[in-house]
Image (cartoon, rainbow, N blue to C red):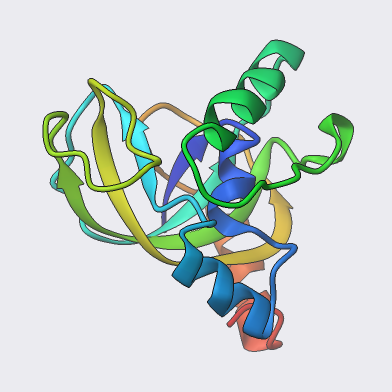
Amino acid sequence: MKALSIRQPWAWLIVRPDLTGEARSAAIAAGVLKDIENRSWPTKFRGRVLVHASKSMTRAEYEDAQDPLWSRGGPTIELPPFDQLQRGGIVGAVTITACIAPADRISKWHVDGAYGFRLVDARPVPFVECKGALQFFDVPPDVAAQLRQMHELGAIA
């Protein structure tokens, strides 16, 4: 299983574990879920990938995420408190459908000068501790086994 490390609170904004049912559908329609992952490098990868929340997050990164996001328009999103964001493990899964060139911005979440990985069908999963890595990486067999077991038990859709 492939995973991609994403710093918090950006990983939370992709998977949005606080939204379920109709609220989740409405949020997707309103563009409240982060639908682009910004990177300095392009990818040809397409398909399902696990969302790994990086272990590190500074207070400055957390505060920076609050200001520019909300100034891009749309509804205000209240982030969980700094110390409640899960870090250092798998928090969700998403499908990457495209890699958008820096000049072809398609979303308020696409930052100037970055490649944008187009994200669809984001789903939170119960937290599973896992060491991250740069670029796409294979999760260790024990983490993959835990996730498969959760899926089989119905904890993951």
